[in-house]
Length: 344
Length: 260
Image (tube, each protein chain N blue to C red):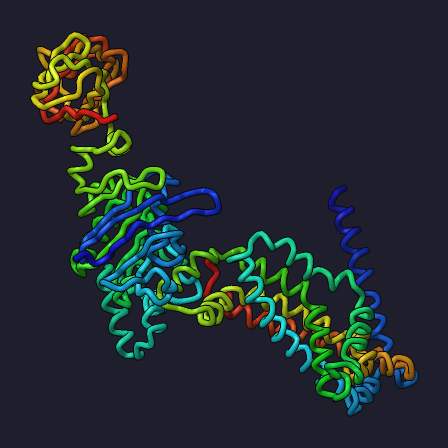
């Protein structure tokens, strides 16, 4: 029994169909990310859950109750916005207490809950400040506390980290995940940043043109992309045109190098792909010429030209091993499991 | 050289504004022959009609501001939130009172609401007061709407509304607790102008035959010599005083949120 069910949601704005046929079940306490480029419909789905948009067709069910026709203020949903959207005329404590006040929680109980929430986000002493006196990261934490204070049934996060700078983004995303796990609150997180989605989600829904391309754990999304779009959008991918020599045994040829994949393949030509960290320089494999070397500290990033395309290899830094020089002729290989066969 | 010209401009402008004022003050002090005195002021302030009409106009001004806020704030908010495409239309409508003379408006009122009409508002004093109030609110509309709309433009109206909705707030709470406090500074500047307009307004009050300050000034001006000058100075001082107080109030609120 799923806690939050999105049942064949569709949304059109005039003649434009933004969300096609969106189906998703979210377990209680689960953290699900909607990942996709801008305009893919992820925010629209979130807004339909919140009640700010009415679905053209389909249902939103929370805890067994159909809320599709309920107004946003009746849905008991907590929402955090990209722009923080703190109320500028209210103090931090008043902001956090706003939802409790609308719910008619008595003053004393409200004060206790507000203090509890401020402690949870690590800003126990800032209750008397106004939003403009806080940094962006602090404001977003207050917004999170405000959304959580009335104990919503579902927490919706609409690109909450996009307006922050890189360092705060990482620490705040970890904090969001910690709080979410601590409260075991069902959460939907919308982002266009794959690293964000991979690092904090239980499951990811990769969206593309109003359709959920793939739903799965971060590892599944990254290691077994179901569509060409997912493969290309999440992470970097090196692609090779391959000719299938033996469909039954999974033997293919790329640029004269034979690769045994050990899985059944369609006959003809296919596209093989490998992540930068799956590729390595080997004695046997696809011939390539190194074109560039970047030293990134823990990782070395090598650029090479193979089969007429740019490829990228990542490998861990090893102090004793010399970096290949640009112009060096090498051969590239990957472990069997490292090769992805792209559909379509 | 530029310095000289800017000083010249300042002096000419200063003379243009200050001379009439100084002249009026000087003249108002000359009631007693051969020496300066405050006799004219004494005479005005002891006139019960002055107190009656002035307090009537102040009360009308306060009600006008209230009515204006009640009409303009929700309208401007709703237009920004839901009907952004209608904004030019609404703006045009709010500017109409600047184009249509007050006398046309008031004659329209009298024709529409006279004693033989369906809604005979002019038949009673309170009905006429209501009519005058509506007329004043119309006159103040352009200033009020502009001010509030500008105030709203500094807010992320949509996000704030959605945040409040997700926290369970309904429309009334959103407008009273969030939108109004955040545009209070703008509302105040609209209120200054409304106040100044209503205090000096003559046409509507005279034609609706209400005991307002404008017609009283006109009456006094037609019949006395020194008192009108004193009255002008008093009206000036009181109006500026009221504006100062409002400015002060909005400052006090303003310090709480100089975020933008």
